[in-house]
Structures are given as structure tokens and as C-alpha cells.
Length: 99
Image (cartoon, rainbow, N blue to C red):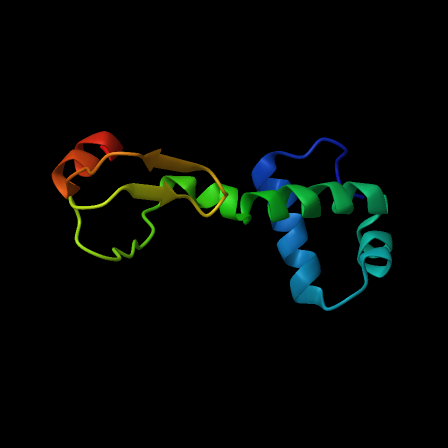
């Protein structure tokens, strides 16, 4: 029987164990003496941490079309947020903004 309160690390480890087992959630939970909703909860937590939103602290490649500094610039994140400059802006100024 598994304890009822799990830390984040224990919950994520539980999901990893289930994935490695190759069993269904029901079979794995019966084997561990765990309600299926508990594993489903941690599975959801793990999926959220793997989503694109969690990549917000990572650098992503950018592509520059045209000549920087001579045209309006729009910066868009993978999650859909964007910054639009309606006047030309230099790469140096953009770097200062994102620091």
C-alpha cells in the first residue's frame, strides 16, 4: 500500500514507474494499492510540466526576416504572446528589452 500524501517528486516517480511498467493505469494502481484517480492526478501534473508553457525559461531560436532596424518588428512566443513595435527597432534595443 502506498502512502496517501505524495510529494511532487514521489508523484512524478509514480507516473514514471507506471509508464515503464507497460501496464494499464488500473492494473498498475491495483498492484500498488492506489486509487486510479491518484495516478491520473500526478499524470496530469507531469503533463503540465512538460507543456510548452514550461519552456518559458528557456531560450528559443528566432528568425529574422528582412533587415533588422529598417522595418517594424513583431516578437511572438510559442505560447501565443507577442510584442509588436510599430517603429523600426535595432537588434541591440531588442536585446536590452529581453535581458
